[in-house]
Image: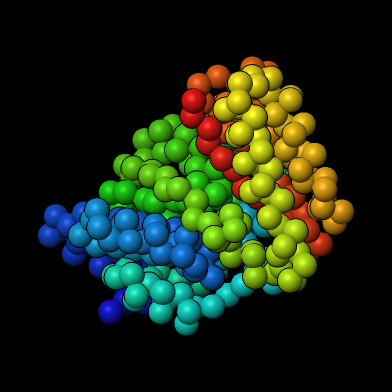
Length: 282
Ligand code: PAF
């Protein structure tokens, strides 16, 4: 049975008991509308720890003024069901006034990583992510936290934050879960019309094309992104935000592809913005 906790005080009381009993806590932070990608994170947290906490909080601080905060999918009943089916002990679903009480003004930011890639279209996004995740880490005090590789830049930014700020929670990244046809699972996929859902395959197909080119011996980053771009441009309605071939840690564009690189794409289909990536290890 998953216990739904809405208040910080109730979570703190539970956490004190777990710590006193020497239990290891695994944590999966989410914004809800949970799907099979989240389920894979919860299963892993469940398997590697004594207690598994999932948070569901649509964090207003990580949405820009013209983004989809108001229409972001919310389905707490469905989230509770999924958490129960995969054995989560606690679903922490705090209210806005618990997370950002009146007078709140402290934020967490980084010097460089948040300005790249996603940061160009979403300049305040990672400040919001860093702030809420550090707050959640402080509240849950988990031994390990689990994130999906689908938000690749987010995982790099959060790992850096954990290192820089001596956060005692280990950040683990699990592979992207995909539909059979390759589309990466995302809560935002529910926005897509039938036509857009078909068109959305251009993201994973561009990544496959880019990776195939690297594996065939191409080393010029620009040639790889050219092929990826061309694949996406076959879809008339797809508007490219970025197509990139970058260093996995610095996220800087690679002139020459080395042993490890990350290919990333961000594409708008109608009102929906989708991202995907592929880590290429030679
Ligand atoms: O990846 C997400 O769902 C969110 O960015 C996160 C990490 C839960 C922070 O709100």
